Image (cartoon, rainbow over all chains, first blue to last red; front, side):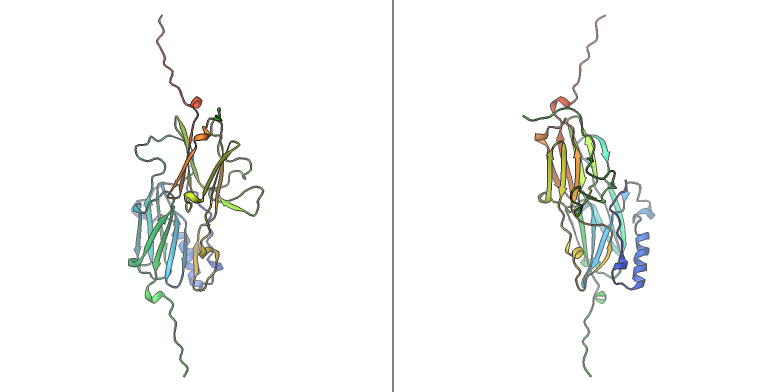
Length: 156
Length: 151
């Protein structure tokens, strides 16, 4: 049941230091386990959503497709260089509505969990998260020391 | 009154789509090889008086959703524009990880004739599309009272 979009991880197409490429490949292996699995919080109903991550000068942007999830039921935690996302949704019918017979089921589970190692230091206190039409967008401003700085070159 | 009768939801894919494509892989629509769509995951439920189809279509809002019914085929097409960061390169911007693609959704369901096509309704919230297909009166189960025979 854990079908999701084909993973198109391709960090090699972008100019990155070799060490970071290796890091990302390792991340991609280790990341794709539920963040709560070590505490026994995960089970077969927990799925690991795909994420897109990009950066500009001032921030890291993490995007994740979470159809049916509401922002109130999504938990976003930042620890050091790790961002953890988890949440629950109601799969089909609201409370009080009798659940009819399922003829066909493809949609993923009611809970998700995902952790992402961030390549730069960010200010979690300044983070902004929006969940719109089932797409979560987290903006993580970079720490001052992680932002590019223009260096004045003075002629001798 | 054009309410139609007989049979049920025959099951999803018409012959025009390549057979069991994994969910959310891009699926090409026949006749237009250059257009790619994502196939949204679906659940189908049946109750005594209706069928309900739920589709996960993150990024879609009701104004970008087109649902049509004709020739026993329910067609769902959701338009999602590719975000600028994915479309264009820009100085200072770097894509770190792309695990999923973004684009239009497309899926068709073959519908039998137990459906009251005049009263199909759909709603879209939080990227989940919910289509309500009421059964026609003739298709609803009828309780038959059994009277004890006098012997």
